[in-house]
Each structure stands twice: as C-alpha cells, then as structure tokens.
Image (cartoon, rainbow, N blue to C red; front, side, top):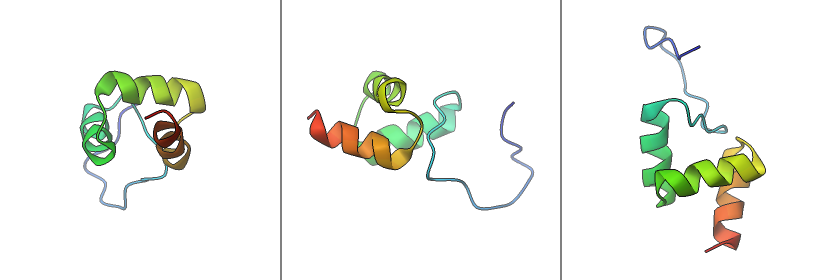
Length: 60
C-alpha cells in the first residue's frame, strides 16, 4: 500500500522503502549511491537506514 500523501506527519527516516519512487530518490541522493546499489544493500541488510549506511560504508 502506498503512503497517504494527504496525511501530514513526520516521515519515518529510519526505514528505506525501495518501492516508493520519492524515497528511492531521497535515499540515493542522501547516501550518494545508485538505485541498484541502494536496492542491493536493502536486499542484503534489510530496510533499516542505519544498517544500509553501515553496509555501504564497509563496501566502498
């Protein structure tokens, strides 16, 4: 199910949803990686933003 854009509230920046285009754009820019690198990292370590950051640091 997609995010309800009509509902105002703080976004959950602790998780990465690679099925939402705007989140993919945000995270690829924030982490300085390609979509493929982001998707691969999420597949390997899960949706936790902290886990993905650490994984990408270790693999650069």
